[in-house]
Length: 333
Ligand SMILES: [Zn+2]
Image (tube, rainbow, N blue to C red; front, side, top):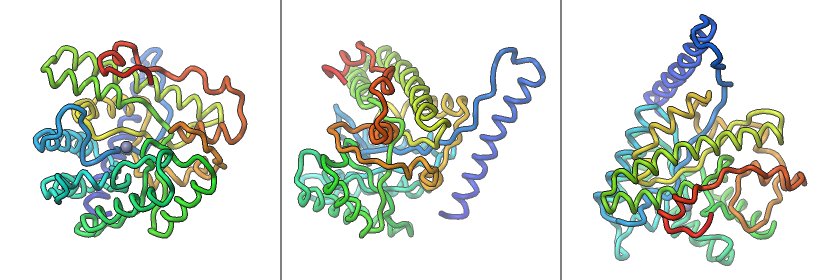
């Protein structure tokens, strides 16, 4: 981490604690009435499918709009996020596309970290182990030279679809392969269906329906806050405390527009945004996890399933509203 980047993180921490101090002051002076200070919480922001994902338009112009939007918010709020890259998106018609690699350079120049998300977004549950391993390595090979330009090395891997393997030997084989390359898995605790909102938003944007796009954006913020509240409660129910969380987002138009508002609302819940490195030492991430089910689910739920909790534990997870499913032309979550 560069000294400059570190200073900016510290300045964000000062800003963040300043915000909490301000809230406390507000309350103790009696002006706030019934408002409670939010508890101190921390979270790593992880953003998948870099350099960009858009369901309606694959132009370089859209790619740049998304990248510029995301980096604006991450830089503005000094968020030490990590992005996960699909190496095949750095090619067009089988040839390297330098303008797309430049999008990743913009992330690195902003001081952000990049990890591997396989070359082709390969789903481990639909691919045999050797083909998956080859695609994982190809992803590493596509990314390493760009990281080296910025004196960075590859340290994290995110499974596409959060599909970590249908049996324990397969799961372990991938972990061993990652360890050989000096990488570890980036878990997710606040899982969500943001991709459905994103698809709806892409379609509304494409037809220049700005009123609907704004409605989708507001519904997205409300949904994500409900997801946060749900997983905070799951954390307290399973572990008796708020663990350090990891949020999954994607590099899409929706976040290029709404990430700033989302970060502000999360900060108001007491969140301080930290690198993945600062989240993973939380003892929760050392809990046993033998989940080999079909779904790509939160690590909180993997730990809960491994522990053998009652099915009622999982109740109450917020659903994507019907009007969003309809706008996205998605049958169900
Ligand atoms: Zn992905």
